[in-house]
Length: 443
Image (tube, rainbow, N blue to C red; front, top):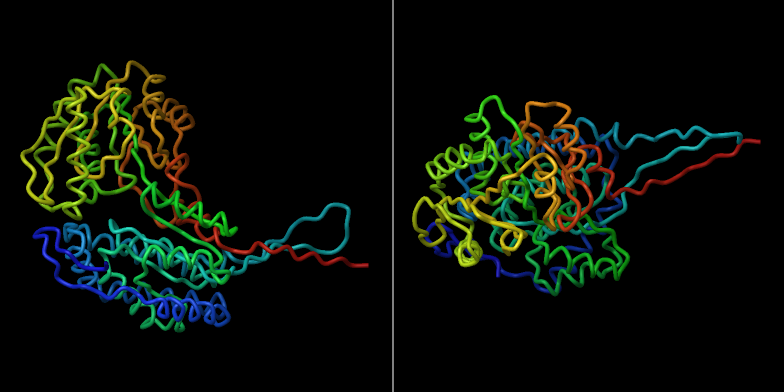
């Protein structure tokens, strides 16, 4: 089940044994036991700095593993490790402030009251394949800083990254059990969620996986954080430099070979700019058609079925070429309407949909006409318009006149069928902490 399959060749280059039930119990017992040995906030942030340092030292190996497992271009894999360094450093610098006791101003009563943030215990993390190190950092950094311990189940196609990261945390000095990797089956994950020693679950993955995990966690009264799919709109209402806007649009679509939940996927352009935008965008997107494969043959097969169905329903595809195995050429779909199935689907690859908008209201309507609500992008020369549109978009994140602007300090998450909860920033450390009230009455 857990194997490294080179997406460029389809060849299995390494395999890892799936966990036994006894192995799962050993991992959970270790995490549960380590929960009492996480030390002070200062202890934990010191270890997070070592984690950041080890990411820096092992950058080349970690990046090469990502390339081998899911085909990411090397430069992007290296940038992923750099972002991890930023995340671990961010929480190492700020966790003490975020977790400090918060005095509560009392009314007529005497005495004191504080809100004290403490760990809840063992957390289960279920991670995806598209960012094998970064997604782990978003989950691990704030929760280890808070004093929780982690059992982590990575995507089956990323077992080498999973093993390398587990060893990295051990080498940084975290106690045995603070971060435990498991090559678990779906049935074993279900039993972990049901186990009373597990206090919360964080999943990044598909809408289907999120719904299944949320249902099971709810049955056992476990809190969940879900970061699921997205079909982020890229709205162009006005511009004083169309070429620059088109370049941003291309970058937003091709991030991680188009395999990012928050990549721009639906381009909504004001009618006066539409024809010119489509011509320039199509030319540049196709010219930058990825040289890297998608993460797997299965991923390419699924994208091909979606594109073929859109064309069969009347959309027009302009493509950079023919598909070969997991290599998928960039493409632009026009003529898509709300009647097309693809309009409400997520395209996980280098294919974009472009829609004309008659005015601002129509652009917002198109942007919100999706079951997803993760990120969004608004390009306009009018600051007031940017503020209006940002307020009206149904999404967890809005980026105005810029792309690829995520940061460790910026909360990440969505609404609607893109999930709930937040990672990164201060909200990221608030999800799995016990906000305990301590009220002292004086006489």
